[in-house]
Image (cartoon, rainbow, N blue to C red; front, side, top):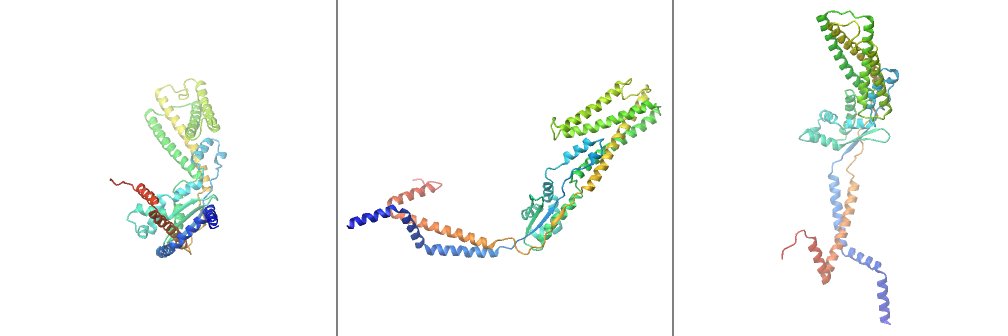
Length: 404
């Protein structure tokens, strides 16, 4: 009877190994409860002390609403160089205007202005300007949200300084936008300003050459028909030059199958055809009107042709430049401050409660794991097979094997 009950008991224990393993685990925890408790509380106390020693850091936040890029109406008002206006807008256009302002806020120029303004070398106690920039960049976060707003977060130990730093980013960026051409209209204005300056210089050079030619060869009479031809040739060449500028610029961002590119190419071909027809319909070429057979007269006509050409080109670019200035005035890069930074009332970090809780949990897990390792080592030393396997494990864990 006793033998049967013993067999039943062994069968019951064999059929429920999970319960046995759980009891063994609880035994290990109870056996090493003192070590686990003391170690956990020691680490918890240390984490409390460390978290209290960490300095408070405060965060100030500024939210900006950048200007929205709008399509200009200048090309609809002027038809002479409408293609060039579209080309300038395409070159200067931005996929996401907010990315431009985020890049400006993160620029070295803005950082250096803020460092100089608040003497951050002394505040951060950094030996070089480069390290001060890195420290400021680590404490500053600039991001563009899906709502179209730009958020500036600045972290610092000084509760009053942090708000001033956040607002300074906005102020320095506004100063930078007054110098740089940021908007599409401003970039078009800058494009036409450069083209206009080049045309002005070339016109001045052509006028000087004309004066020198007249002083050398004297005034040559040109009939009304020839003057009309000169004006027509100058106008057509000026329009053709503008169209070539447009096509060359479009090649960098569109393919040959683009409808605007095809249209501009056809317009250029039409202008060149008009020039060719004008030359075929007269004796000689379009560069040499009738009534100018002598060399002196021919030289004067060529110089006069250049003057007319650059006059026409200058007038066309001047009109586009004026409309670009009007568009820039209407589409000014005004960044609006939605939420200015204010002095924070509460610290941003350190999160002392989180530090203590996480440290305590990790300490408890480590103590429990160490207790199980001690128990496994003890059992392994008692059983010969386990001791041999433990010795083998230790040998494999070594990086360098001992020589016999």
